[in-house]
Image (tube, rainbow, N blue to C red):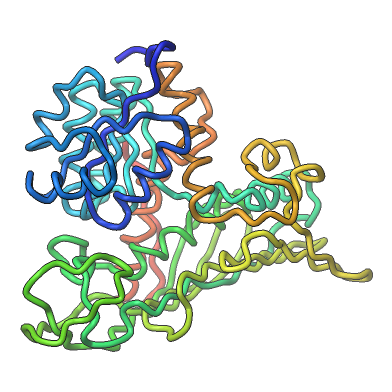
Length: 391
């Protein structure tokens, strides 16, 4: 597929009508695209959401939607188990693709998507949106400039509380739809992508302890949307095997070491990704629940709190900032900046030689790390991360 026409906005198809589908619709529009239509788990559900979100069309199925010449890029925001087939269908139809993480539930499927997108010369992206908070670009620039020296030790966490109770339910609790890993794959993948991107290090080996604190949960009769706050009062008891939380130690190239915890059962933590990166000359610390500030640690002089202010940031961070200093931007703006960066390549017609956004290759690498974490958790031993095998 060639470049999108300069005479009309980029046409977007969103596949998935849950909470994250709504985010994709809203932020695609904010990034200047035209949301052409929706595909849902059923034509009826897609129709309801299309009316609620003021989307012009609800397609009966993905095959029909991909025949629409107005669709330039497909946003895959559906349950994990259908990512591979939907992204593959979009690529085969000549459409550019933005896919939610995890890219697939099987690393071999992800390798296939990398190969297909590369051969088709189509724009491909994995939604690791945390990279596009302005201060994350600033942190990466600081590492690149040597401001904190060589990365030594990276620690942190990603904690939520929305699956704390045994009556809390979502499709992510179903291994056949979400995969065998849950908290690690769902939110841990964000932490792993972000810190390795900032530190410019790759994970080579892992040691994981996976925890299932709710061995039984109550599955309601109908669907429960993510972060809806709704809990099952009646339903069927279901045995749980996926991880509610995890502790993972990391070996990285260059001698860097690290560890992180991930939890979806931490009361009071709504969506808190945080990290601390300690280098030979300084440290950086950031939390997504205070996204406009970056702590800079020093030895021998006063520590600093950097407030996001585009006037004083690295150009890479300034370029993705929406508002002046003191005007908070966060989750929605990060998605919008991510999409706008991707759409620049869509408008051009093919990926840049070195895309500024996370690609399928990044999603694939994340799945190889997840594979190692899963095996390590089972064997209770250090496991090496397999090399990429896409061609």
